[in-house]
Each structure stands twice: as structure tokens, then as C-alpha cells.
Image (cartoon, rainbow, N blue to C red; front, side, top):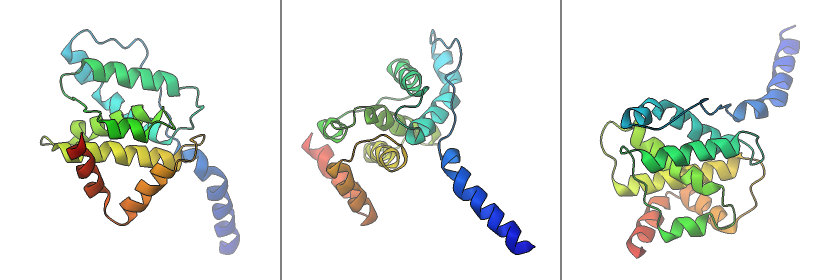
Length: 169
């Protein structure tokens, strides 16, 4: 009897686990950014939005509105300032939607940190978010540059790579 239960549970997980990977996110209805308090109020939504963008298929119906919400929040908040260096644009050149993921990874780090993270940590958070989305989201084109970064990350050399790119500006 327990073997059947385990088999049933294993089949259930195999069938439904991919559906659980993509976190659901709904852009807050009627959101508006009139004051800095509005930006602060939506910070938890921004964090959920980033997790969604890291996992949702590229053709998900909420993806465009989630991107727009994140970018609109980011352009007006005084809490987060993201630096987009040329290497970032090179990284997302094959998959333009990954730019919002980079911005989101940086933003989430700043929002969740109790102290002000240094620039390299912020850049690294953005790159890690891009790599997570690249591995997780359906519909992202294969990209040799991102494959190389995944290999560097496995070797523990991604931080060095980011530091070199920051120096090259």
C-alpha cells in the first residue's frame, strides 16, 4: 500500500511540479505612483514581480504588464538606482525581455538588504536573475554568452567576470 502511495505521489509531482515553478503574479489593479509613499507601498509587489519574471514563460499573458509595472516603479523610486553598463546590453541582446529581469534582480537585492549593498553585489544580483530566468523560463532563445556565464558561475568565477566588466565600463 505504501509503495502505491509513493508511486502516486511521485507521478503527481512529476506532472504538476513544472506548473508550480512559475509563480503567479498579478500586477496590482489601479496602481499609481504619485508620491514616494506609493513607491514604498508597492515594494513587496516589486519583489513578487521579480520572482514572477524569473520564472514565467516568455509568452505568459501577464509578462508585459509585469515588465511595465517594474520599469514604471523603478523609474520613479528614490530607493533604488540601477546602473546598466554596456555588458548588460550585450547580455540581453539576444533576449531583450531579460533586461527587465536584470533590473528586477538588482532592485530586489536593494529592497531586501538591511544595509546598502555594494555595486558589485548589485550587478551580480542582476546577472544572477538573468541566469535564473534563462534556465527557468520557457521561450528564451539559446544564448552562448549566457551559457558561458552559467559555466563561470558553476566555477565560482562569475563575481570576477562582473568586476572586470564594471572596470571596463
